[in-house]
Length: 311
Image (cartoon, rainbow, N blue to C red; front, top):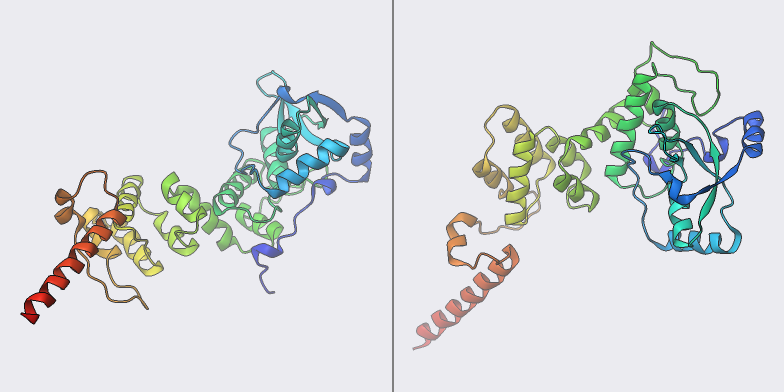
């Protein structure tokens, strides 16, 4: 059976979270809640962006109100409510200067709430790698805690699949492979700096997975070298960095040496160790400024050489 791409993911929609009988019960129980009484879901992995889609949502809410109720649960700490599904609608309602929002209140456990929160957001388009990674991790952990109960968004009566791995259950729900689930979860082991570079497409997905195996200290060192030299590792380089880190042979010089290697289809370039040059530049100079100054000086030197030859 052919694997589906992430773009083909088709999960249970918000409207399908309950069966027909439950939907009718929910509609009878919709209440208006002060926006200020609703807290964010802990460690919510999905970012709320102020973009064109958000502007359209704000405009729609200003004209017609919130058409689809949010879903909340009583706050476990006893104060107000906690958002489960509807973070973007709540944010748009705040921008629209509403004081309250319609909501369905359900007293879900932590794991049940996590699974529904993930399922109601994971189908969004253009998710960042970090969002998908932490979403997979949160649902994976919740499935393990629930004994791999996979029907929480479909029925009140649970069926436990103890013989099936949690990542396999998650893969089947998402229409992808167990290996791909685990590879995304690996991204959660990257530090914030490296993970941001993945989100910004400065580091590709496959190299990022390999770099996630570096220790926290080695990741910090690697990021520093990458910033200094304005270089990122290829897949094969990332695999070598991973291996050297696991062997305890990773250090700044190793990272520099590997990053400065010529990559396939890369033009030949001159590599000069930054430590040899930094004492000649002001501390605030960026790598780009250093490069521009060096090129400027080389140009002047080249012109002088031509003049000397013409004499």
